[in-house]
Each structure stands twice: as structure tokens, then as C-alpha cells.
Image 1 (cartoon, rainbow, N blue to C red):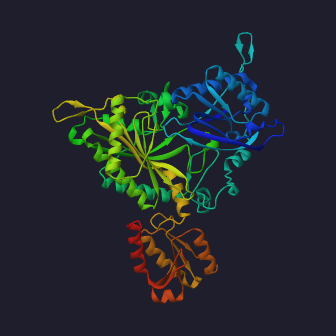
Image 2: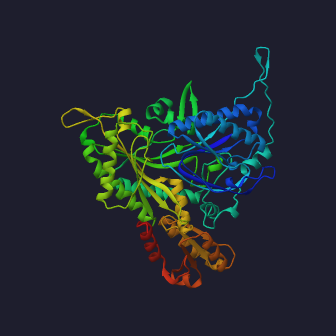
Length: 577
């Protein structure tokens, strides 16, 4: 069984028509739109494997719902059949039994339960809360049946016989159903421009091709330059860390179901889902003085989070991704200046890419740690900074992190959808848990305050939004191919190669097309690759030592000196226009 648990402000759903002929017609009152507020929605796919032990499946489902509900303080449950989470669904009769029995058991335990109709096509909309536990995906396994003889268990082992050609065919499949996607969907752009791909052998993990990795690396270079200017030091922490660290941070208790686990010499380890605990160990490695504060530490950290395959969505929702995390350690009287500086940095980045955004102040959730007076202080500090900077913002009550309130930046994509990318979280709690200290002017020990923040958020998601916003027409500094060099005939080959050498020496990303085709075809192919500049060289250009420059919008300049073109494009790339 697979479930996706969503803690929501509200969900609305309405049956449209029957998806299964065997399902009884709904009474008229159940065909109307239903709205349920402040609830835990459990999108559920009952699978074939669950049919061997339906009672066990019900128990595991109920136990997991109770566990999640207790963490998010929910007393209303919406059981929502959601076949898209699995390709291996059980029979309708088994699924309805599991869902009905689970609903009955939850009601016995004093939960209010709503069930979305089974076997119907439905439309639904919902507003998910923003706290860390608001979206949790889990794979549930019922208690199995052991085959016994007397007191001994028989373990039946079937030898696997591999059909290597079949296996190779299966792992090589990389289908993309374009009919369900908009023309500017980043997955289509990624395929057309040879940027990235996905494979079933690593669900939700990006295979960056050369062209896509060039974009990724250029964004990383930009990030590094800007953070160096802003006084950040870059670090890198391990991917796999002992469970003890995650117990201290609270992630082991609150996030374990979404963490990849492994063992080493009998010890439990976790593949990191967040970067902050590692950053705190770097801080603790040596004594700190007030003179070293504020300390700004940044990390382009690769993290992994378990997600069900049914909720993965290209670059927007993945299992492995890079967070441009930074953790700032400072004194209380430095907080407002540091938060203001982070806001200025985030706004600078988003303006660079022409992104629209909105801002939310997310306050204390029901399940939280720390003293209430510290929460009052933290929320007031964030609010003061936003007001001083005259930023328009909306208060999002109850959606802060469990350790502190936050300011969230939501980017708007080309379809008007919003995605949370940037965030600033004010944290008095984690420094306490990790016993972070610094020596004050009076030579006494004090506790620093911590700011967690990201700008890109997920580098993968940011690239996805950027590709859709620009429809793949990236600015020259980001374009994987910056110049396409085309010759008119084979007679101009030597001159074209001379120009190519000059472009390469200037570190311009150039690709050539010397095929025996018409120039019109070559230009059309370059336009499909969304290359910013096309250089055409023929007999006239060779005699004059020039190039004909064609831009993506179809404008052409003849007789441009090669040196002048190189100087201008290098300045454009350097200035990141």
C-alpha cells in the first residue's frame, strides 16, 4: 500500500462520473461538492500485495494514520482513494474493504472521518499547510504470513534467472507522455535540448546531460560569486550521518519515514534529508568568539528524501536534489541586519532572472519546540524587518517550522503556479539542542541564534521554473550552446575553423555545423536548439575577415568583425545579461 499524507487547511472534492462499472451509483447528496477543513488527507493506493493480508493492511494503515495525525495534531481524517500512486493496484473489492474497515476503526478511536467516493473520477483542490510534516509519503507493508512446519520456519528461496537483454531494455526505457504536458513544460524542453533525463533505476533522481550540467554549473558559479561578495564561507558535509545526529535535531522522530536508511558495522545511519545538522557540527568544531559573529556558512548540499513515485514531477518534485543552504550564526542584536541582508540577496537573485514572487510570514505551528517567549520574539523580529523594508507580505498562521517562524518566498512560474523556493527561518531551538556557544566580551559563554536560509531552494526546481519561464530561450551566459557556427560551403571550411578556434580560445561555448546541407536547414536546427547567436561564414566573410551574425529573434548583421563579436559576447557573458 502507498499513501501520501497531506495536512491541509481545506480540501474540496466532487465526483464526476463512474470509473468502474461494478461500483454502485452514488446517492444524489454524495454527488455534490464536499469541503472538509483542517484535516489530514490520506491519498491511498491499495496494492495487490495487500490482498494476502487485508486485516494486516487495515491495521498498518490505521497505525500510520494515527502516528501522522498525532504529530500534526489532526482529528479529522479524509480517506481519499488515489490510484495514481501505484501501477500494481488491488481488486476494487479489496480496496474498498481496506478503506471502509480503516474508516470504521478510526471512528472507533474518536477520529472524524470523511471518505471520498471509490471508483469515481473526481476533481479536487486543496491548500496544503507549509510546515515540514505537511507532506509525507509512505509505503506500507502488512504483516506477512510465514510458512511453518512444527516450530521451524521454512524459508523458500527462489533462484533468480536473469534475462540480461530484457533487463537492459527495461532500464533503458525513458518514455515521456507529451500529450499530457504543456508545450513549454520543462520536461519537454529538457528532452528537446538534451539537458537531462530520468530512469526507473533511480526514480526521482536527475541524470544531468552535458548541456543541462552546463546550466547547473553556471548557476552554481553565480551563487558562489554572489555569496563570496556577501561574506559567506562555503563548506561541504557528508551525505551519510549517524542516526544520533538526527535524534538530536529531531528529524529521526519527525521525518524518519522519508529518510533513506543504511547500516555500517551495526550502527544506523541516514542519508541526509537536510543539511543543517552537519552545518552545526562544523560550527562546534572549534571555539567561537563574539568577534567571529555573524558567521555565514553556505553549502550546496545534495539531499535525498523518500517520495512515492506517483508524486514525482520532473525537476519540480524529486528524491535527490541540491539545496543552496546557508546557516548564519549571530548574536541577537545582529539578527535584524542579517535577515535584511538575506532578503536583499534573495531579491537580487530573483530580479536577475525576472521572476515574480510573493512573500509570506509563517508563524508558530501547533507542534513546536522552544519557549513561547522566544517564539514571540522571533515572530516580532521577522515582522519588523519586513515592515522596515516595506515589503508586501501575507501572514500564514501555523505554517512555521517546528523550531522557528520563517519568511517564505514563492516564485510564480509561466502558468501562474507558485512554488516555494527561498526561505529564511529564525531558530533559537537548534543551537540549544546542539549546545552551540560563543565567548562574549565579558569572557562568558553565550548561545548564538541561528538563521537557516535558501535562495534557489532546490537547484533542480529552480532550473525547471527557469526553463518554463523562458521557454528554453536562456540568456547567453546560461545557454549551453552560446554560438552556432555555420559555413556556406566546404570551400569556407578552413576560415570557419579559424573562427571556431578564436571562439574556443575566448572560452565561448561554440558548436559547429559543417554538414553538407543548406544554410536554411542549419539555421532552423540552431533555432530549435535555442542558441542565442548563429554565425554564418561564406566567401564574402572569408575575404573581409568578418562574420554574419544572426540572433534568435531573426535579426541579422553582416560584416561584423570577428574580434568585435568576440569582445561584445564576452562582455555580455561576463555581465550575465
